[in-house]
Every structure is written in structure tokens, then in C-alpha cells.
Image 1 (cartoon, rainbow, N blue to C red):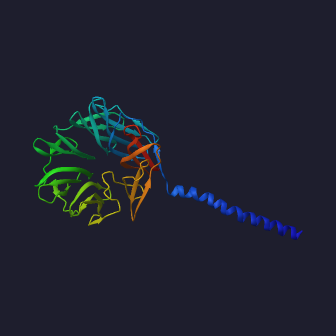
Image 2 (tube, helix red, strand yellow):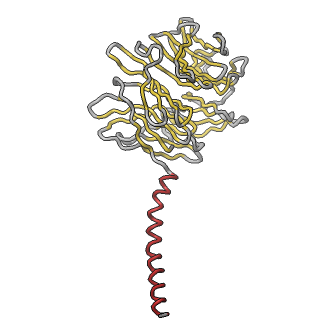
Image 3 (tube, rainbow, N blue to C red):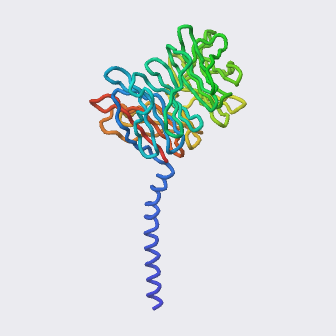
Length: 361
């Protein structure tokens, strides 16, 4: 009897030894998938191709907005899409939705959504209240070029040009004024703000220094005294609530361009050259994992490609798209614990149309 019991115990232990490794192997891919989520495709209602994507911004996992323009039979038409946490849909309820023009940068100001709108050559800011209604805030004058726009609670800026030259238009919540810039500034190429008293811009100058960085301190625009790499330009400035600021751009050496990043921690600037080639950094965002993310030129025609820049630089690919010959995510946004991308995809035999992808969430 004792001998039979011993045989049974041995058989049970042997079976356990055989089953446990198999169970561990089965569980490992699921655990790895949770730790390293992959990009997935999100359907987007088609527009009139070819389309151009201008911006993407998210307030959280359940609200994101993407802008741009499509090509109608009689010219450009503004294009606005909304993500509700489940699906993308097109919004055509804003003023001038059916008129010539285009939409630019999206900003969240308190409970409202603000979007820059070029309405047949006349600039305005579209505002959507928490109750869901759209209204338009006109600019104090018409510009020949609308270069960029940014808004935060208590302030908004539009930069561009008219027949007399550079214009920096400032809105303080009650009215508009025109702000002067330092001597030698010819053209403001872009602007972003952290608060009403902390805004950053990059500009072209006549001083021979090329690109310079400007900072608004609540009183005046001044040169920020940022020592940019020699022979370089700026693509974007990313000011964050923590006070950290990141500059992305390109440096040219012997006719070859390479991407650089400069980060300000509140005391000093640090410059790095991640292995990104000549990537354009305009779409760079701070991801939910704390790293910088940006789309890069893909070496696969049927897949998008993204770079994650943290302590080291890594790359990931979007889902494979059948018959695609060019997949181009144009903008990224942090949406809660996920990353959203919005851009264009060209399928063989057709013109570029809209695409969106999500990582995590």
C-alpha cells in the first residue's frame, strides 16, 4: 500500500513539473503585451483627398481634436475631427465649416477648446464651450500670413505678418493689443505658452545670429539668451507645467542635417543629439511614460514609425496597412495613459487620406 502511494506521489510531482513550465510560457506573452503595448489602427471617416493634417491635442482619454484641411472642388475646406474615447467623428457645426479656409492649432483653455481658423483669408479663433456650442473670436486686424497661435487661461497670441511686417497679436481675456519684439527680429516662426506670463517663441533675426529664442515674462518679449547649436534652426519649443522646457530643431554640419534636443530644467540647458537623423520635431510631445515621443521617417512603406527618447532612444512601428505606400503620422498627443497619432496614409492607386493610431490606453 505504501509502495502504491509512493508511486502516485511521484506521478503527481512529475505531472506538475511538466505542466508548470508550459503555464509560465503561456502567461509570459500576455504579461509582456501589457508591459509593452503595441500601436493599433483607429478608423477615421474619410475626407476629400488629398488632405493635410495641422494639429492634434487631447485633454484626456475621452477627448481629442484633430485639425487640417481637405481639397474640395473649389479650394481648401477646414477639417475638424473629434475623438470621444471610442471613435473619431467629424465635426461640422463650427462657424464657417462649409466655407473656404483651414484650421490650425488646437488649445485647451479652461473648459473650452480653442482652434485657430483661417476663414477665407481672415483669421479668427473658434471657441467651443463646455456646453458644446461654438463661437468665433475675431482678430483685431487681417494679416497676410498667419504663422502660429497659442492660448492658455488668461492669454492668447497670434503671430504673423501684414503689409508693414511682423505682428504679434495678444489677447488678455478682454481685448487685443499688438506687442513689440526685440530689435532685429524679422519673423516669428512659432509660439507656445505655459501660462499667461510665460510664453516662448522662436524667430528669425537680422543680426546674423539666425534663429533666436524669445520669452514673454508677463511684461515684455525679450531674448531668452539660449545658446542654440551653431548653424541650427528651431522646429518647436515645448514648455511644460513643471517648468521644464524642451527645444527641438536641426543642426547643419557640412551640408548634413541632424536633430538636436535642448532641455531646460529651470537652471541650465542641456543639449543632446539622439539618433534621429534629420527628423522634423514639430510633433514632439511628452508621453504618459515621461519620455519624449515623435513620429520619424519610416523605412517601411506600409507602416508608420515612432521614436521614444528617454535615457536611450528606441523605435516602434504602427500596424501593417495593406497596399499602403506612404504612412505619415503628422501629430501626436498624450491622451491619459495612451498616445494618439493623427496623419495621412496613401494607399496604392489613391490620394492621401486620414489615419490615426493609438499606443496603450
